[in-house]
Length: 57
Image (cartoon, rainbow, N blue to C red):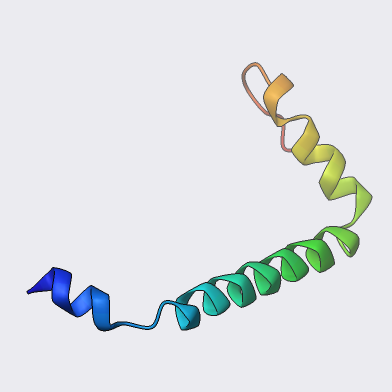
């Protein structure tokens, strides 16, 4: 039953929808990256190097 259902589906819509979704997410991440403050980027870059307690000063 599932095999017959899948044979009758048009897969062109799914490939187009996947491509559009990928492009929208890629553009959104690119825009967010461009407008992120460099201070925030530096803080995020230091996360792997963080080794213990954090001072909130």
